[in-house]
Every structure is written in C-alpha cells, then in structure tokens.
Image 1 (cartoon, one colour):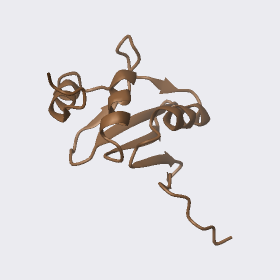
Image 2 (cartoon, one colour):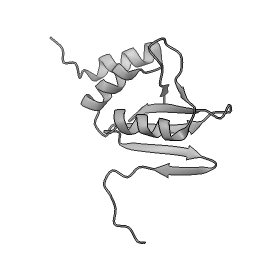
Image 3 (tube, rainbow, N blue to C red):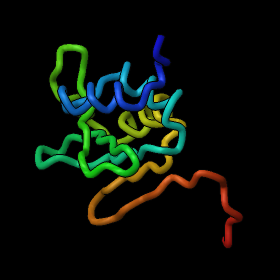
Image 4 (cartoon, helix red, strand yellow):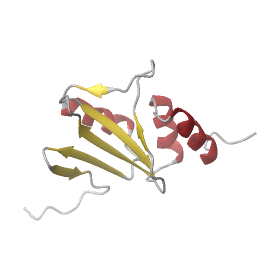
Length: 113
C-alpha cells in the first residue's frame, strides 16, 4: 500500500485539477514541510488570493472552495489568518501589497530596533 505522502500522487492530482483545496493543503502540511511556498496577492478587483507553489516547480496553484471556485478574501487580515492557520509549515509566506513584498520569517530574527 502506497503512503499518503506519495509525492507523485499529490503532484499528479494538482496538475490534473490545477487548483488546490483544503485537503491538498493538509497533505502539504504533513508531507511537504518547508517545501512549498504561499503568496497572498491583491486581485484587480481589490480582493485577496492565496497561491501555492511547490518547491522545484514552475506552476502556481490557486486555492479553491469545495465547490471548485477560486477562493478570494475580502480583506487582507482574513487571508493572512487563513495562511497562518492552514499553511504553518510553508517554507515561505509572501504578502504582496501596494508594491511591497512582506515575508514571514521561519525563525524569529533578533530585532535591530
């Protein structure tokens, strides 16, 4: 019996369906620790999308609801809260806002201030 953490299986599912859902994120959390990144970016409509990228791949996956529609957030704090709760093992988390790129540090650095 193959392991749930079979990398090939997860990649094939993601490639076939392109978007990811909460179940996929759960597998990423358990099997791909530090090997995926999360980007939160503002859409042209002023909403916020979460994108996921697996290490070593060029393809970016959008996050979808159970019904299969892309999941936008109406405010940035909700999108960050979702990423914090569901993507805590991501190798990096980027937030692109108004020309700024904010990055979550893996380990707290000493503050120079």
